Image 1: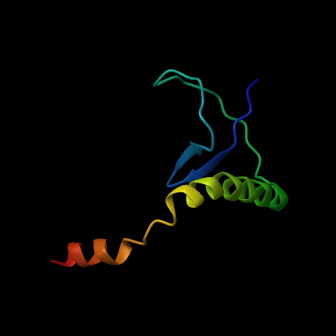
Image 2: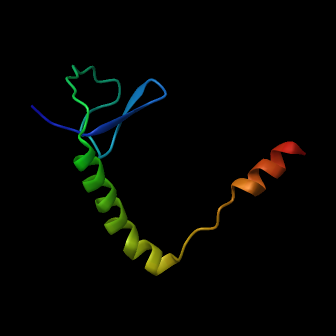
Image 3: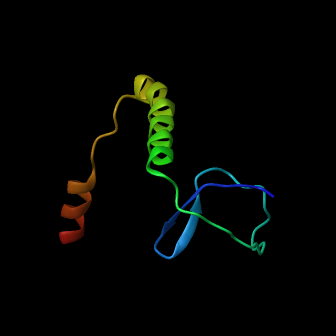
Length: 73
């Protein structure tokens, strides 16, 4: 059995890592809510992976206000 962590968002399970399945593959899911500790570990891992990107590229600007202004036009 393969274990894949996912987030349930907008009615869909979104894997947090790549899965080796063909498109439209039917699967059976068994799930349990992640513990708070596991969520913290995941966030620490994300920050660890982000650090070299931020160091290399810098922070990306928040473009949300520009997008909102454009949609109001």
